[in-house]
Image (cartoon, rainbow, N blue to C red; front, side):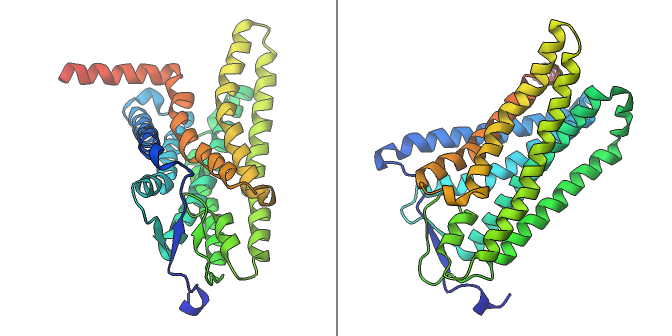
Length: 311
């Protein structure tokens, strides 16, 4: 990549969160607590799945990868946001900004693909229990590997196209991280191809997994509701409700922000939406996916009993 094709801008200025100076301390403490909860909660999930042999199943295999992805996803933006909340000069180097954007897109897509893989696993387990043997370790590993490859390819395509643009004078990003849409608005080059790729590829890596999730859980719900019992209905709500309670705001935020960038005219709204799926959703996932699960609770009690015994 030649220097003349990059940009005359060596760094960008992040405006950060629209918070009053007197409220900085309160919000810093709040977001720091949420970030630590995200990291510790998801790492605890990975540890439990690793240590308890009863959790060595396809469902928890995908869950462990999702937990690791959530830790990385949140770590791409939140530490920088917290640092900027304590700094007067909120700058980020050009290379650092491009890298942050790359990993943000990468882990966003990876989250989407892993959630889709989990939905497929539950679909096979509930709708075709006699065929669940197809969910072998090799297939699970293949699904995760394909998720990584597709996520990498998508984020790399956006990054390579962005590095061909010029940023002549404006370098202020009205956001708390290097958002692709915000960067495109700052460019003085023709961004038609970038917006075309952002929309078309976004349909593939975001809309199609979302449709697959809805179809999978539609079949799951229909299968369980055929069982004429209260237990069947409760199982349907337990299987679909928790998952969709995270899927809905996660995909809703992404649809509004990236597939319909022309509708994102209010900066404060964009920031709130971004906070939802970069801070709130990764923090809630350990509770929604795992800590409400009976097997995870047993594994957690087993771990605590071992710690108490050795202490």
